[in-house]
Image (cartoon, rainbow, N blue to C red):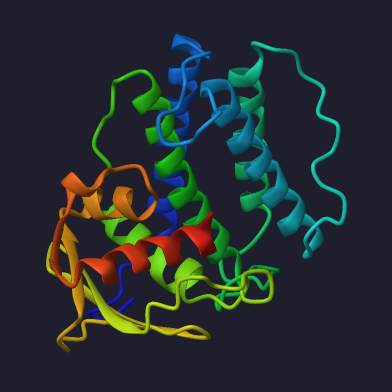
Length: 253
């Protein structure tokens, strides 16, 4: 945490964010489940609530068993319209499971961090994006706080883009082969993106072929495809920006 380039938050802050954003997504579900989600073709609000519930329950099993479940998802028993209640229960199960573990306890993850802390961070970033999905479906977005937005940018770049978890499943069509800078607030990340490797260098002042910059919320949302190009600022080679965005889509889905 003493590293000046670190964006990591405290476990307590991650838990606070998970709780508040889950409340907000449930509220969107109670407002209406059939509204289409702009950023997720074919999804409505009900699908977002089901997806987040499924993700929460999956992490309960991972932390409880110390391994990814072989058969997932199970046959959930709930009816149409019960998605808000299903998410309420999934959140309760998630927090109950977190309470059973020390934050630095070893577990199974798909990142370099192999502790319970990884899942606190991952779930906070997950729900930040998906509560925005619910809000955008209802035309009622609320701000994403700068602290989780900055940490979400860092997580996207280090865990999703630069992580080796997807390499065997994805044959990239977007090698990029350039240095790309991502900037938000006073933070800067250099992404050295090649066909078979990605290296992220926080705080690096090296010149880049292309730069994506904006507010923390705008950059975080853009990286996850929840904000359009007009929300951020591009500099440098436009083709590199397009290839970089396509590479992110490949590895993050």
